[in-house]
Length: 129
Image (cartoon, rainbow, N blue to C red; front, side, top):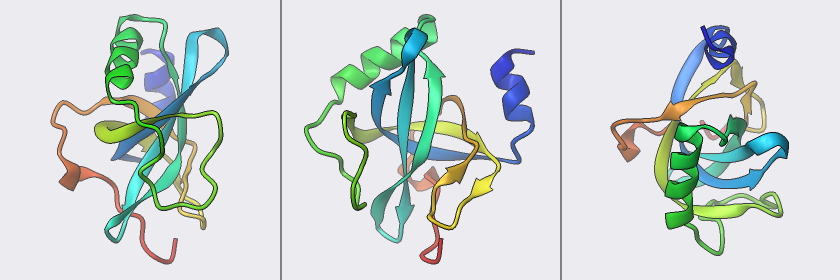
């Protein structure tokens, strides 16, 4: 069992989120910024760390380079600075423990891109969260 599988095994929910941005991290990794629906708008739903050094990571980085955009397509005040924003077309499976009161996921773990990229599958944050 890999470290990601061990970490994901303790997370109760696995849901789909748009990957809407990323920023390089130390050691060949990156922080992926995630979005979910709140009603019909996209909102930042948190972030997860991912290793970009292996073949799957290099593939992800190549995909992200093709869909870069100048500004985030999220309805959120104050998105993080220094992020390379992406069109919301990549959908990732993310394991997490729950959702905080601000609507962000708690203890998220990247599980990989979804084979079936269907917007209807993307997580929905309730208005009260």
